[in-house]
Image (tube, rainbow, N blue to C red; front, side):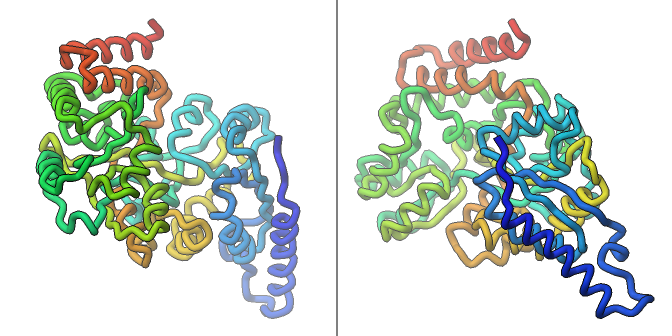
Length: 412
């Protein structure tokens, strides 16, 4: 079900009128209007869901004002927008532009509903992880505007220095006589998302990737690197560091109670800790396996429909306008998300948000390929089985997990 935004549409419609009137009354006959100077004109439609619309209302209105064009903003339910886009674009009923997450990309490309986007030199202005997130099989399909990831959050009242390795961090926690040296939420079903920084530090990414950062369908977490990580899971379970009874809520409450100097979590909990009056700081997760501990990065951005009614205007908004510092500043001010444009991210004054942004910028984009759907269930369950000791041979369990995932990907 779609719901229009009459107030916004009316406001943008009025912006068109005002821009046209202004051009007619203030300029002489030789001065171009805004539309003439940019080469864009007409109207377009943008779909945004309720979780992102606050980020965009203001910047879209400014774009419409500056260009002297008409933009219809349509709010869609977050649970429906992705499916409706895939269904309606082929019929010509979809929008010109859709705002959404980067991990929608695989489904969009496989259904042929999004157009390639050429960023050119503008790509250098964004965090590398953000631009990689919109690459699929060597082609870019979107412009990022915000990034987020988990990181290591420290209770600065319990510890003031963070060791360089994860094992040293555990030893520090033990020396502080903390109930939990570090909190890493898992739960009975496992939580491979929160475990991922430790896994990548062993050089075992979930999928291999091309030089441009786009993922292949080949699992990258096999072989010696994966085996070493599986053995490490067994070690952490044996030491009581990982506990299937500690899910997200339990980890959060324990950290608030001061039962641990560290927790691996995202800004959603960190903001709660700050609201509780805790003195905290945000850091990269220390490496356990010797390589950088990269968390998954979620990226928000804008796609252009493969059947946009006004592709020139859509390209101007997505490529030329959203890549500007002015637009990135406006979106951040409205929604609070960490900007993907580094010049805007550098200007943030919120130290927690700034630190999370720095960690995310060095992270690994969440794979957007459809094959990722075959990974999650086997992945988390196997990790739990290993660190709880249910699986006695971690290497054999890990290899069996890979066989099951590959079989499901192949449709076996």
